[in-house]
Structure formats: structure tokens, C-alpha cells
Length: 369
Image (cartoon, rainbow, N blue to C red; front, top):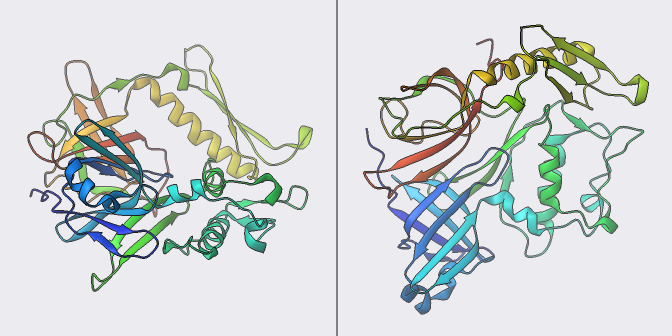
């Protein structure tokens, strides 16, 4: 089965919702999603088209969407326009990029903080609620109702968003998802049921986004069409891991996981300041050590695939674990890899392609799998 080439690129006024174009002729189109980031879109337009109607891609005020097979695959804001001779290049990023241009000028997210043992998912929702409550600042983004046990703030270290520090809301969200025991997010875009409006969504995942996919695979000779780089990152290797948890000074919790295996000793510290149980720390230390001992065997960070029944476009999402096989004269790699992002190239030579960013999967268990 071959996924159809995206048949429409649409643009919309970000403030009024007025449709500016329902079939924008974009060439060299590339777009995709990202784990804990906004993802991106790039493409080129004909200058004559924009000269006649410059509002079609007004940077900072235009929403842009990609539709394929009647389904919206991507949506975001046009941020950058570059004109060189007869070339008019545009760059866009999805919904979370908007928060990089918004700040907490009122403090404590408009009175929703400060935070003590606050669920990070709820703080993310508060940030979006505050941002979209300000006049001319409502993108209509919906944030999942997901809850987590990952908290921020303690009675001794209250989490504040102080107006006099002019905190960037985007940076705050990045901090909330940047740890080892924090939620994940990604941006998605869909039509509503009647295809009369766009649903802009921040998907939250706890303990993480995605699923272990046993129904699809990435494999050389099947759907991988370019030679990936096989990385052996010695600086990521460690057979001794210290997981440092909650507490200060001598009272800070620590758990070690270590083996001797005939290699030069390498150590790694896993900083988990919100974890206050030794059993959890030991589990995390063991898991981290297991992963760090496998990286020296080789990892595949990026693959380029074509659509086949083994993994058609749209069947996977960021966060998923997919079993990946790659074999050539230098490399023999078989293992589970997590999708951390992808870039769709519908107009690539030889047919649509998708470049997928991967990292080795950890030992996270999905419902006992």
C-alpha cells in the first residue's frame, strides 16, 4: 500500500481563523513531528503568488496545515520567510513553538501557582490556559487531561513563576519535560468529526508517550532505503551508574548499579532529584546501566524508509518502540528503537520517503510486555 502524496497545503489567519488558502502550491515540502518539541515544516512558494497575496504566508500570523488522504497530518505556525532571487522559502513549527514568544508577565501563571508537589502535567495545562487567556493569545490549543506522579516543588523549594524574572512559557514547558522521570508531549493536528474545524492538541504521555509496536517493523531490504550511520558512542558507555535522588548534602538518596566486565571502568550519574524511594532509584540505576552497556554494540540514530505494508506512513507516531533490523557488510543491528521524531518528504525523488530519528529503547514495560 502506498500512502498518497499530500494533496493539500492550507493556510489560515491565526487570529481570526479566516482561511487564506485551501490549496497552497508548496514545493520541496518536508514536515514532521518531534518528541518533546514542536516539529517543523519547510517548503518553497512561487514569489509571484505571494506578491499578489502576501497574507498567504504572513510570518508570525499564519497557521499552515498539511492534509493527505483527507486527514490533517501536520499543523503549525509560519515563523520565517526567506526570499532569495526567485526562491521564496518558508519555515514553520507546530503549536508548542508559540510559547517561545509568550512570557509570564502576571506571575504564577495568572495566579495558578505557586506549586508544591504539583503534577507536572497540570502545570503544563496551567501554562497553556494562562497563555490563551490573554487577549489575542488564544490559538485554540487543547492539552490532554493526562495526570502523572511526577511532581515539581516542595515545601522547602516551592516552584514559582515570578513576573519580575519575565519567564518564557516555552522554556518552562521544556524544563517540565526534560528530566528522566517526567512526562512526554508532542503536538498533533486533526479535523473535527465533521471536518468543519481544526483540532490542535498537545498530547501528554505518562510515564511516556507511545507503545511497543509488534505490528510494524523497520528493516533493510523491506522498507529502509538508505544506508544509516551505525554509531558506537564510547562516551555514552558506562558499567557503573549512580542514581541520585531526593535530598540535600549527606542526606541525599543514592543507589548504585555496577558490574565488572573486563572493560575500563566508566561511570555515569543519573540525576533524579524528585525520586524519594531507594527501590525506584535502584530500578532506574539498573535500567540505565543496562542501556549504557549496550550502546557500544552500535546504535542506529536515523533511517530513511519508504511506505510498505511493514510500516505504512501514519501507522506509527513519536514515542513508539519499533523493532529495527539493519544488515550490511559492516553492520548487523537488531533491536528495539524509539521514534523521537520524523520528517516526511512527500515529493522525494522516487516517491514519498520518511526520515525517522531513533534512539535505543529502554526497558520500559507496556502492560507487562
